[in-house]
Every structure is written in structure tokens, then in C-alpha cells.
Length: 378
Image 1 (cartoon, rainbow, N blue to C red):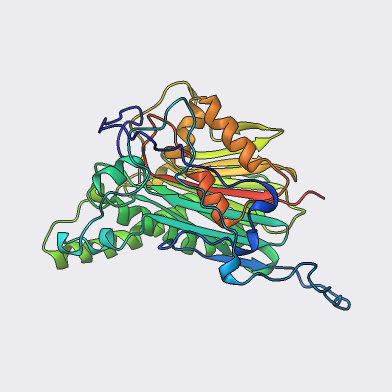
Image 2: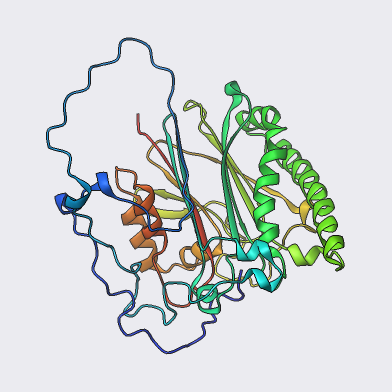
């Protein structure tokens, strides 16, 4: 979080930002030759159920394979925007932290992280991008995310986690990065208990299990962070590593329709159903934008559990407030744009998803991390 999302600095407006051409539809773009932009950390895992029977002999391709010199890629240009004008900030980093600044973690944090997976009938796309304000200031991305499988095969779940480092905290980028990973490690140790409670829709048990697992993860991280602080000759303070955390668990067994979200702080979960977004971890007064939020490490006892049942065709969106705030505040143009992009029958490629996730809207300049989940319809 870089501060109140409705505050925007006003450098000299970019005359042509956001107006670059878009890739044409249809055969003008050969998706077989689509590559993500250079410098992006990408990873995608595909896991298919074991199939029986004989493999079919593949048919020869109906069209010749083009050589690299014959590629027809058309650059997408800068990310799209909603509203009459694009934000005044440039859509790319103007600088970045230096190793000489003394914070190697910040210096080595990429501006963009891209991930994805295919497990059974479930497809995941995930992107974490530096916000416009961080691009302008040349500071590092404070958001983080994790996509992982946890639990034994019979109770396996996809773990999808996002974290938003508090903007005023000196090392929140470290806090968010480690919080998503350690949460995965300690929730994996409780995976069978979580699965049983999830199938029974026992919210109280789920909340208790999650609170214990997150508390253990924070205890482990505090010890590590204190050691690092001691080596650097500075005091350890919890607030230096402050971050929110949201963890969505999705069983890979298609017969299990229940999902659970564990949350500390702002951000959260939306569901796209029949072309409309609905917020599932909605606060009591969703019309009020709260600029203060609970955060780890100190709020580890405030883990909230939200249960939901989905049906094939739903699209789940887990995100930090860089993307959930414009959805929660009913920015209709922004919501419609993403509903159109992610509500189609086909799942976007990794590079397409990244470009769509970077859709810009004025007054929303924070880091943006979003994980979307699609499930094949029966």
C-alpha cells in the first residue's frame, strides 16, 4: 500500500500515454509466437489427471510453421486505460533501487512477476505489478504473491496468496514476500485438517486452524527478521515489516465445491458470475474506504475465514487493494473492462493476462496483485 488510493501526484501529463495501438483480433496475431516482455519473471505449471487408453496419433498441422523472421506479432503498446484520459503517471518504471542503497532485497525485486498453473479442471493466472506511484518514484514493488499446491494427493488444494506491504513500513516488501511463502509452508502442515473442516463447512474450525498456522509462520519469520536486523546493526521492529495477507484454498477435486479465504487486512476476493462482480469478504460498510488496516506481523490473531461455494463457470479474483479498491468502489468502467476480459469462455494466455491486469484507472496508483481462477464447465 502506497497510501490513500485517492491521492494522486501530478507530474507533467503524458500526452500520448495509454493511446498506443492494440493487438488486432483474429488471425492478425499468431498466438503460437506470443512472448512476454523481456525481464519478466514467469512460471507456469501444468498437471493433468492420469489418462487410460491408447494415445491418439496427432494429426499433421494444417498450416506450415513460420520461421522466426516471418512472425506476425503486433506489439500491444502501453496498457489500456478506462476513463477519458490515462493517469498522469507514466506506465513504466522511471528508475529502480540500487544495490548501493543498502537494501539488496529491494534492488533485486522485479517490477513484474507473472505466474500460472493448470491443475485438473482448474486454470490459474497470476500477476503482481508495480503501481504507477512506485514507477514514478523508482521504489520497489511492495506486493507479493504465491501459487502452490499443498496437502497429500487425496486432500490436495491449490494455495493462492497475495500480500500488500504497508507503504510506510521500511521493509514491507520483505514482509509481504515472506508472509505468502511461510503461510503456504505452515498451512501445508495442516492441509488434511483444513480439508476436512472445509468439506464440513465448519467456519469456526477453519478460523482456528488458520490462526494457529499463521501465528507459527509469524513466529518463524520474526526470528529470521531479528537475525537480519542484528547483522545489520539495527533494532528489529514489527511495524517495519507490516503487510496484509489473503490466502485462498481451492480443492483440486472437482466434486468439492467449497473454498475458503483466510484474510488479514484489506484487499480480498471477488467472484465474477453472469458478467457481474460480487465481493465475498465484504466489510460491514463497503461504501467507506478505510485507510487504516490490520496487518501482520502483529495482527496474526485476527485471521478471518470466509467460506464460499462456487459452480463451474465462476471466475474467482483474489487481489490486493490496487485492484480490489476500484472494484469495491464501483468504478463501473473498470469493472466492466475486466469482466469483458476475464469472463470469456477461453482462458487468457500468461502474456494476455498480464496486459489485462495492468489496465489503468486514474486515482488508483498502488501496486496491483491479482490471481484469477477459472474452472472448466461440466
